[in-house]
Each structure stands twice: as C-alpha cells, then as structure tokens.
Amino acid sequence: MKTKAEPIIVEHFHYDRVASDAKPTTDVQVSLTEVEATGDGAGGKMAAGKIFQFSVPFTVTLDGFQVSGLIRRIVQLLDFNGEPSDIPAEEMQKLSRPLVEYIETLTYQITIVAIDHGVQLDFQPNDADSDKQ
Image (cartoon, rainbow, N blue to C red):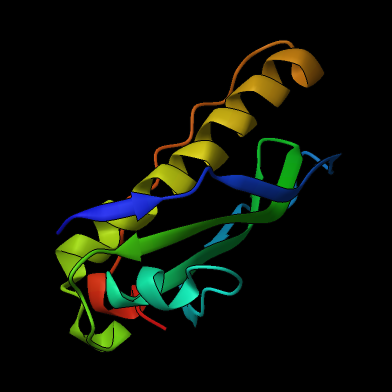
C-alpha cells in the first residue's frame, strides 16, 4: 500500500522515577482516526486517498522508572477509499511501527541520561486485529 506520511509528532513524553518494587506494566495502544484535509486543494488531496491520524498513547513501568506519553502521525493511504477495518492487520502494523519505535528510542535515550544505562524496549504486537480502533 502506497502512503504519504507526515513527520511523527511527540505530543508529550514524560519520565518519572518510581519505586524499584513497582509492578512492571506495559500499555501501548494504537488508534486510528480518519481526518479530512482542509484549505486550498483539499478536494484533490482527498481524492488521492483517505487520510488517517495514527495515535499511540503509552505508559510503561520498568526497573524503577515509568515513561508515558502520546505519539502521533498523519498518513494518507494513496488510492485507498475504504474503512479503517478494511486495512489489513499486517499493513496496520507496518504503518504504526515507526511510532512505536519512537517510544523505544526515546526511552533508551532518556534512561541513558537519567539512570546511566539505556533500557532497550522491544514491543511486539499481541494481536494484530486488536490494534484497529
């Protein structure tokens, strides 16, 4: 599937130290919202394919720290005019993976500075169909 993607936006990213005995948790959600182009040329842009906003809110607690935040990206699926449920699970994973990688990268970088060793996260999808919302 051909796409036209805007840059990834970090809406917010937060790091906190927590008790070393805090229960490890991982909550990373991918949601998809259809958006409409506005302004000059909006009609032509929409004719090229539907536009979606991928949002990834997250909270991860590990090893005495917690990171949380929200990462977003606007992606146009060229020559696609269906519904979000029509997007194959494999394609959803491919489209959302760069946002999840941002969480992994930001977490590694902040933990290098904050706790003097980088914590490498490696998120894998649990159930591809549950990623569609």
